[in-house]
Length: 121
Image (cartoon, rainbow, N blue to C red; front, side):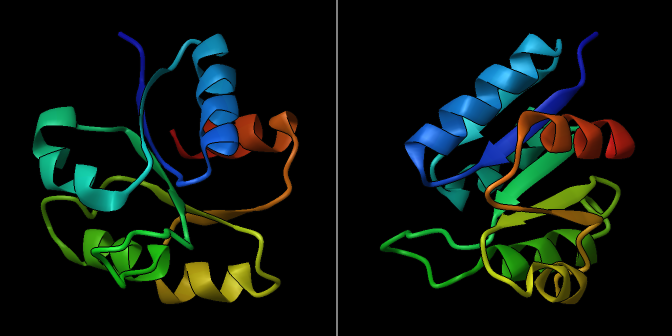
């Protein structure tokens, strides 16, 4: 059974590229442009979450860092590895503050993407 990865990224081009790359590696990918999909995390049961830090949701002020912190602080979801994806220079600090399992700095190449996914899945 293929490992399931949840990709939350508001940039369509990045989301589509990541989805295609991961599906090419044999993963099942569920992608979303916003974090509302996390309300259904019990249904999706992802093995890994790739979470953009800067989501431009008009209904949410939560950053990827805050969402990661909530996921990692909840006993029901704390076991799921969360990788923060961001272009900011202090992405390592953001990931640490969000209790994330790792981070991926934009722009990234597909080898970096595959390496961090394999490391945490």
